[in-house]
Image 1 (spheres, rainbow, N blue to C red):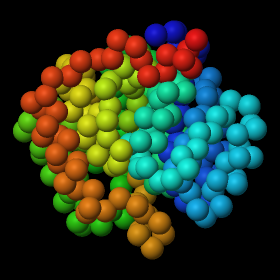
Image 2 (cartoon, one colour):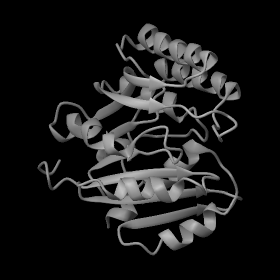
Image 3 (tube, rainbow, N blue to C red):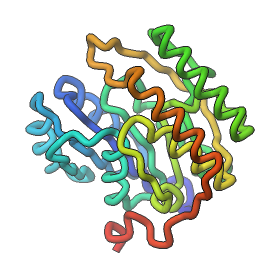
Length: 246
């Protein structure tokens, strides 16, 4: 890992139908002081997002990859990983439930060598607007992670996840949807990685405002937490971003 101040950050932004917010999200990410690249994946948008991102693709330090049809958040992140050239990877959702200004503190454990995986925890920070059913689902994910892996995580399902690039780009990820969170958590813990957590702020939006994750995503996430507890994890010999690093 390069020294603090010279480490390059790769911000992966999966996007689907966020025409109203995507420019604001990108503007806030670009304010970050860290050396960085922004990798955006347009996941088959149909609301004008694609046209906006074609313009953003011309901005230095920004690369946009396009899925012609919607494939899911996990598939978008995996596509983004193939383009990573940085030292630290962080996932930034395009709906502003998570504030990009908090990225620097989330990645600190990785930069200081305390962990290779770092999560932003909504449950130890400040959380607004999460619906009761979503809250129950999150508690179930936390409980399962503790029971299956013995990991004292406070927020397994947080979307703010950061990784050392040489780790995440070598994970044999397969998920296509929101179950990515459970898959990558299970793999990391099975590999013996410590997951550092940092309190963050979180403001949930409603389904009327465009929130996309729902109860149809519950069982795939449960499955991923369960299956990776008993499946051997072997890192890829050739990272998925090998061509990007040439």
